[in-house]
Image 1 (cartoon, rainbow, N blue to C red):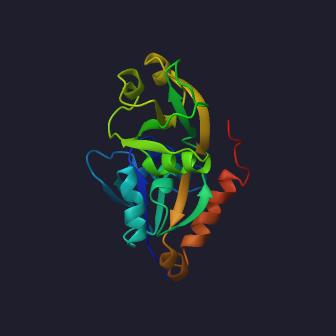
Image 2 (image 1 turned 120 degrees about the vertical axis):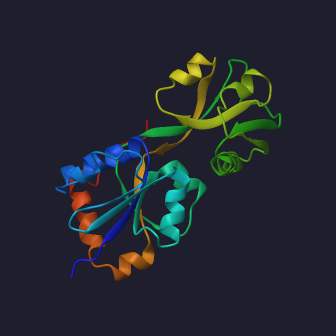
Image 3 (image 1 turned 90 degrees about the horizontal axis):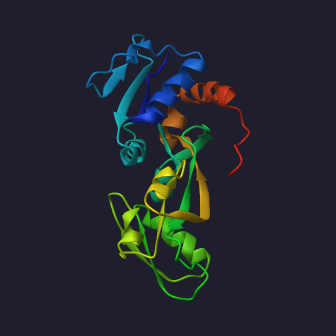
Amino acid sequence: MTEQVTIALTKGRIEKDTVKLLEKAGFDLSFMAEKGRNLIFESPDKRFRFLLVKAPDVTTYVRHGVADIGVVGKDVLIEHPSGYLEMLDLNFGRCKFSVASTDDYAPGDHKRKRIATKYPTVARDFFNKKGEDVEIISIQGSVEIAPVIGLADAIVDIVETGNTLVANGLKVYEDICRISARLIVNQAALKNNADIMPFIEKIKAVVGTEEVPFQ
């Protein structure tokens, strides 16, 4: 008997890219074409149910078993590292974590630096590995202005094209790690739902196993 698989997707671009990937893998997702304001979608054959949620909530849904599978950016997984199994790098939504600041930033000096970021775990781990004692300033909105107005010496943020940094007078000093969309799964669901692994294998066959190099 076929069991239903519940998948939590990050709303927005990752959701759209995931739908394209699943269609490429042979799944009919036409029932998601007209979303409106709906956040829950069930396939006509009842095989799949999709939940559209905010990125940090994907790990929460998977951790608590509300969703069997989740698709979310690696940035979220670094900040929320437990309660799921990371199965696949889907190789879309690619960007990177970087340290950026103004032209007068001196990364090599011995001054204790203030780092503004929405990703305190990423920033703290990066500077700890370098043996640098920094003050982390958590900001929920746009961090680009922090070095400009003197709130911080530098920022740690996600960089895709770098255009936003340039527009705010910043440049990248160091790259931390590559980011892309990842497929995660609830460990109990993987063990108990026999339809999950074949589903993942179909996606893996489309994505391939070769990781895109860090740039």
